[in-house]
Length: 260
Image 1 (cartoon, helix red, strand yellow):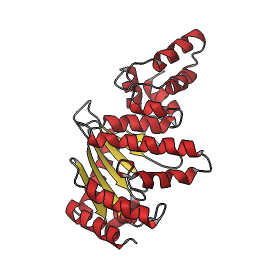
Image 2 (cartoon, helix red, strand yellow; image 1 turned 180 degrees about the vertical axis):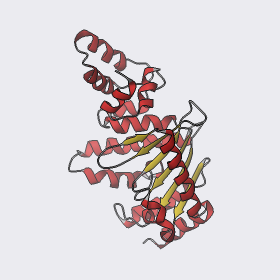
Image 3 (tube, helix red, strand yellow; image 1 turned 90 degrees about the vertical axis):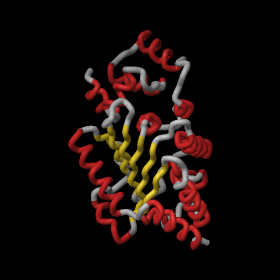
């Protein structure tokens, strides 16, 4: 089966399959099971391959949460951890790499009808573990454009939002982190970006991008060169329309000071 066809069946990108094939990223036993299901592999060969994945000496940190994280989310985390740069559009929430623990917990708790308290806490820990890439020896460049509405949406309660805003202001001083705010009166470009969009530059080539689109119907990865150029052009337009980094931090600090 071609990588493109396998990726379609597994709802991931062909580049993800390529990285698995060339051992540039590790593969969880759960993912092995899914691939073998698609390929129709059973019996002793299936057992051998799953055991090899389970006994791998070096694992991505997210594999410790493989019993909790869905396959699509694990795929995204693996790509995010590889990226040399991340250009992010967030129209509704603070991006996961910049969330405080209590803000992340408040978001994840929205699914408490489907998850036990233990599962909620494990997802919170996974969210915090993701953030370690920003303090690694070679962090990616993270450029986030937040719609101004994100700074007003009360997640949990107002005190949680206030502390989250202060954290954003602090994070803007971190090496290789750029935060911009798109003000309400310049938001026409959001008719193009209707949900979370992440443009990831991957290390294999100078211009190797993958665009991740998040929706309630499922995750989508865009790798077609023409569409990639469109998204990158739109992001440049968006960052031009947004407040500059210094103005954005002033805006965030001002709103944080008004929260009671």
